[in-house]
Length: 257
Image 1 (cartoon, rainbow, N blue to C red):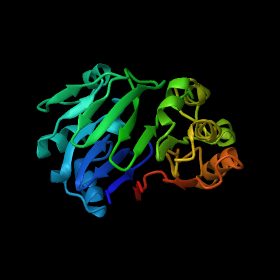
Image 2 (cartoon, rainbow, N blue to C red):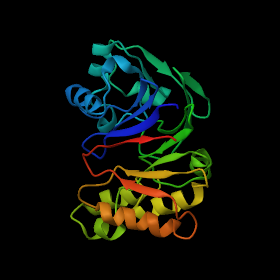
Image 3 (cartoon, helix red, strand yellow):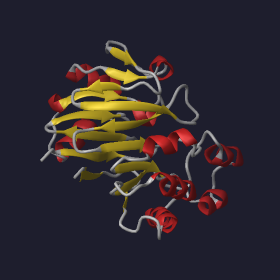
Image 4 (cartoon, rainbow, N blue to C red):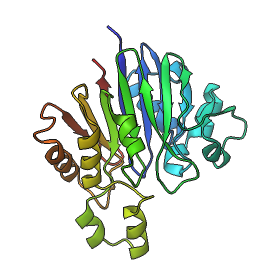
């Protein structure tokens, strides 16, 4: 049996990081928490930094790269990202590897396909990672459900999808109007309803689980996110498991089998 899994190490504006593991090795997706905290959370799922083959960053925002440089320096790892992302990611003293949206590359036994997403960043991407047991698609920090995003999620066994805000909580909350508009815009973040729309369009019979991530502390609640997505797939994919990672929390490991 192949020991392939995904684990959410941290989620939300306080810092994001995901571990995709395969037979004792791992690829780290984003490093938005401190190096020390990243190592602690890796240890909690039975991994040491020496088992990580590389760091892949989806975009340059601090909540995705806060611990990237130090973690890579201390562990002799490269940072992989798009040209636009790497240009704005602190990486002095670290080897960087550029990839391009739409072009596959391989790290260890994991094949990775980055795809374009709409977000307020230089050159952001989502990722589809193919392992021996199946594939995992990650689509967080995006403002629009585009045909490209749907296509790259179809067929994956596990979907990691953003459900950033509840529309009513955002609009009635304390954020200034310009920030509310930016969050809800085409290059902002996905609402719970958007997440439900994305999952209903991309989940297929082979999709076992959806992990909702990047929930706002101020503008969402886990139960609202779960309800929105479960309602969207009811009658279409009733066996689909919906999990929610709370703001600042960890979840998993979730096994591909």
